[in-house]
Length: 307
Image (tube, rainbow, N blue to C red):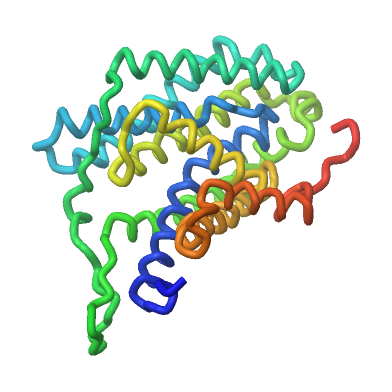
């Protein structure tokens, strides 16, 4: 608790909270999009995140001398997961849309096991690190010329994540609310039968949504690679955090996921300082409190019977 009286530490933890929250949001936004439209509990979202981190590592390690290698790795991660998601959705998942959630959950869990073993076959079980991109290896001075005992420096890369998260959120909101394709996606969320009756290719819409959501998971994994160890099992923690975010924010709510990711980022960053012995359960306690207050989440809506 004494650390909370140090303004420098509070500032750093505040920025860390936003940075972590925005990285989590980019990943959870894909899960929110998929559940909101397809109503599929995609347990494989975490392993897509892990594959994105591995793909980014592979690209960066092989193109270390190339300018912009990291950003090429981010694009490659998104593209690779888009292809993988297309194959999974078209080959298998689209047969399960009308099945019960338990069957969908078991299928996506099987994907986790298969892709987890595949990752070990390709990359082994070692831990890898991805260097921060050129231009973002330094720090930004937030002192703004003030005469402070210690300058308020914050690393440039996590600061970039603080900015990138809102950009992704606004971009997704514009696409979903201001474009014809976004209106089609929202219509598919409300009534897929009516959308099909109007002549829209609903299976194509579902494929596009699953591919886009999975690509976001891959991109989120690539963006997380410089701040975490890239290793087997990294998908387990992230999928739990993503589900906590979408449950807190409200299933299928974009801005709910944004707020939920921010809240979870602050709970994880400041909770360690305030309640160090409760570090592992704080996020679950947060979810429980939200569900007791609003069982459908902060931005969610109670579903009508028979939906």
